[in-house]
Image 1 (cartoon, rainbow, N blue to C red):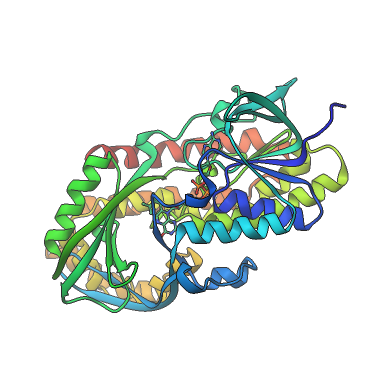
Image 2: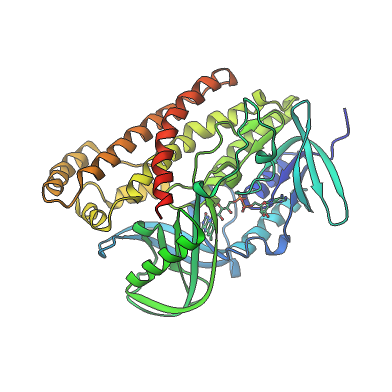
Length: 451
Ligand SMILES: Cc1cc2nc3c(=O)[nH]c(=O)nc-3n(C[C@H](O)[C@H](O)[C@H](O)COP(=O)(O)OP(=O)(O)OC[C@H]3O[C@@H](n4cnc5c(N)ncnc54)[C@H](O)[C@@H]3O)c2cc1C
């Protein structure tokens, strides 16, 4: 067998790739991360970002201190288009992304990880098996070999979309139709009626939150294009009861689509944005990516110890991810577009309906990714919904769309909760899912095209 440059080669030194490398190195595996951009400023194009505080303990990452920690925020408030407010506790940290990345790189180096600056050009394949990565360095091209390759290269994908097609893999890139475009501005000298924490505007997939120093961040995410995001941002800004001087702006892309049905192949695993593990209601992907990483680390550690790193040895990563967070995200990804498409007046009406919008329901959605309506809540909501229909505050077509997409989403969730235990049942399972995703995607693509 040819000599290995590492046990595990990781494409991308963002939060997902670095976390996987750090933890696998701690377990005694030789890990090498290949990153295209300058390590010191990784994340600078985003700048401030948010992570729920509970994630640090869950994933064993020391909490941020000093300049990395910009603010600790206690609560989130959902604001309806007409100004109705619903606040709930959600301790969240606003942090400087480059500093967070540098700290993770430091932990990884201490554990023995080698971080290399270079561009991953694609996988090294032998008889269809992934055996390493083709790398472009400053002055040459080279092939690095490893027993396991991890694609953590973000939305563009340096490995998965460059795999040849095959019955076990999907190599389609994330298209603009499967993207949330984010545009955000940093405001200085802010004046007006500002809430104390994060304000979320579901109508715009928008938010406003404290940024570095005394600044505030006002952002939106939208389907369509970056131009559409800028236009929507302007509409949001015009509706806000406060204003400020624009001190900076930035933007980027977030995947909004189902992950590939399989996250593994012979010698390959995909994680983070590269595997579309983002929260479907906000597009945030750091914590939800770490959830995938934590499973991959355990499964890869066992597979590396046992010998050949084939699809079968890595399959538990698929099963555990998709039966847990993956099933919840499948439900939300399929059901959210129907909600995104309702009119501002209808959304305002839903904020009034008892049992639909409650503090507990809002918190569970953000923290546990659960849409929870108890039988009691549903009973309380029903007469109000019927009244809304009779008074014309809710269109029958809206109710039909929400109910239809809820049924599709529910079917998907149940299928994902029964993700095949082994590769044997995979193709039949994927065929059944296809039927439901076709329906869900038709609704999403129609909505995104109209944005
Ligand atoms: C404007 C904006 C604001 C956001 N705010 C938040 C937020 O507040 N909270 C939150 O949780 N999420 C937020 N997100 C989403 C979050 O940034 C991503 O979900 C998260 O960074 C994904 O981490 P990752 O490690 O999977 O991918 P990435 O962070 O994208 O890391 C991938 C790495 O791979 C490298 N790479 C790519 N191609 C190659 C190649 N060919 N060779 C070598 N290296 C390569 C990239 O340079 C990059 O460093 C935001 C996104 C945007 C665009």
